[in-house]
Length: 457
Image (tube, rainbow, N blue to C red; front, side, top):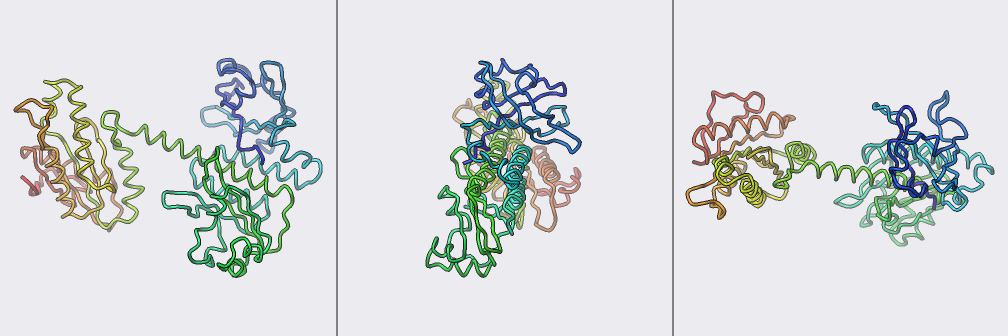
């Protein structure tokens, strides 16, 4: 298996001063980060030719110099300069014992095809380092695999909450896939091994008795190679290359498929980790609930995809300032956490709940006006329940604003939130501990002179 998924990364400024390196580079150099940061790139790398020429960025051979004096042959490629004047350089080990070198040892000297494949892999490594979404990674994998194998079609399948789904490319077997079988690529992803199908009869023997031969013939597929996509041992998905003609596979086919698939898998794993960290940063530290930005993202991503009606509920606490003033902010934070827990228990699992800021919360549910009003009143009642931590005579209630829209347009969350906020303000001005429903015109232009009737006293 090619070791291309393990990549050293060095970030430099316009003067080629090292700004950052990843752990792989530090392992190769056998040193700590502070021994490298601030040094010149030339102190670590000796390039055989410049990374850039008249045709743009290109990979080149180089030598990596370790602190102990040991040198390591490498191949280097540049991601190019970003808007902040930083350049990222990818470094791949090509020493005698590296998987990279073992996989393609002698290929460049033997055949032009070997050189072309190596160039495709190096260029793909740079491309996968730049992708910013799973779809971009999947589409790039389709493109490079189609060129690397001269395939008639390529499909990429990624694992999700509901199982494997086709993320990019074309699957000529999809319309003819035998009923009852898991989706294309599932067995490859779970098995963790590259699968080569050399003929429709070969497909039938691989999964006998379900009609694979007929599916391949109906789809015009004579041969295929399927590779699992794995990152650090974790299954991410699978890639399948299809051929509409008889196809022989040489000894480089399996390591090539593994290298491309694992490059894409590493990029997707990075994107997912970045998304997890980004979403974690968009949670309120006190209650653990999503903040406003994450609420809007979740609503856009899920509820707005197929709702018939949407209710936005804006909640502002009555009497919370007195808790902070008399009992202190620690008691106020504890109260906010308790209210967040009550709200989470009150709404459905599919509804979205977040802390808007201060003593304000927001809930979004794919329900119509009647159910939305009932949900808003349940929220009001949950907040009004007694709190054991509060002294006698001190209570907390909620002023609640509600706006409901149908799926007859493209509602803008910011406008809906403002409308629900305005209705909440009317509830507070009317004495609090009540729900006010905004008219649909509030979604476009909040009208302070209109006072809808309260749903609950």
